[in-house]
Length: 393
Ligand code: ADP
Ligand code: MG
Image 1 (cartoon, rainbow, N blue to C red):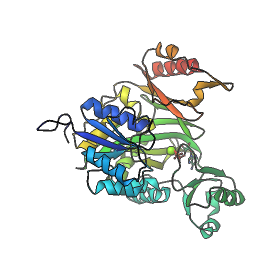
Image 2 (cartoon, rainbow, N blue to C red):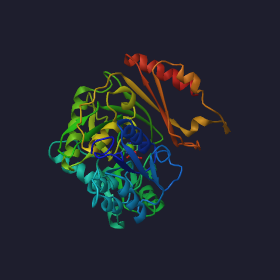
Image 3 (cartoon, protein in one colour):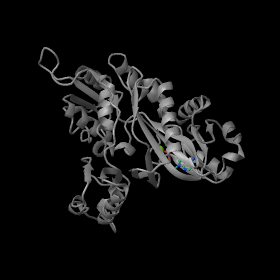
Image 4 (cartoon, rainbow, N blue to C red):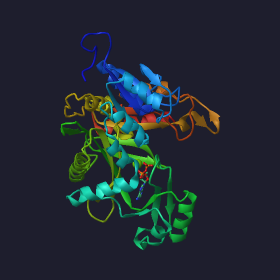
């Protein structure tokens, strides 16, 4: 699907996205820059992506008329969040190219299926998931091995930013946590001693061609990504190579088409470098890849466009060390009073790239935007990041 006017004239090639959040907004920006029109389906009439898109279908994700309208507008459709109902994607895929496909999204939607996929990939010589057990019945709960405690109980579906997770110290806490989560299907994972968290983003075309970004180092606060650092010397080359190979296998074995992010833990096991464990995957661009907009010659969102449209996939080149700071709604509050962050102060620093997502209400914990810092060296980027964080309070 080539960008710009469709042969014969009269209209522009149009790409669609299910979901209107910030990831959809940045997809829309990338698609429009290449010359596509865009259509967003999101029930929220004021969604960040819907407000910048050429077309906005404001219906529920599984609304038949909404899906029909989207298909009528679009040559091909992608998704920006993993909880699009599988049936909706299947409806779209019956009539339009949809990338990633419904089966791949279904695996990413369910931690039990996701971990089974990781384990299958690991048997072929890759990186395995944390020790875990699926809990779908009281019998599963009773059969949990002691070795998984202390652990983290995670709902199999719909968890994000640390939501739908409970840390459990012992069996009594585990039973209480499962009650608290409504006895829905869950995964209990052993709580690991994390030394680092990494992620790898790949883009894979329908022909199986695959390219990846450099390995990202991520820092979480309260289960939410806070900082991503991609600087020379940030990740051990051995771990980086393993993480990239594992991500490639995870994508290839799903016959994945689109942009995929895989998160890894580096577990402290007494060895010099630590050991990699694969945590979870996102069937879309990822928060830890936002730096690619400003620090790479092709962004994760442009690669999402290219995989969807069947355009060539060049190997991304990072041209600057980068640090990304997530901007949460908390920044707009001090001592319970609303404040405006010191944007002028932040933008006075060299190499700062501000991205706000057009959300009107700054609620604590809500992702409002991000700031990417680029610099010539890792040290310079770190120094600017510290200064920016200070100015933001
Ligand atoms: P989410 O879907 O909310 O991102 P994750 O499974 O990635 O869920 O968990 C969020 C964060 O919680 C991780 O980035 C990590 O910091 C911490 N965490 C998750 N699982 C474990 C674990 N098994 N051991 C230690 N920390 C964990
Ligand atoms: Mg995560």
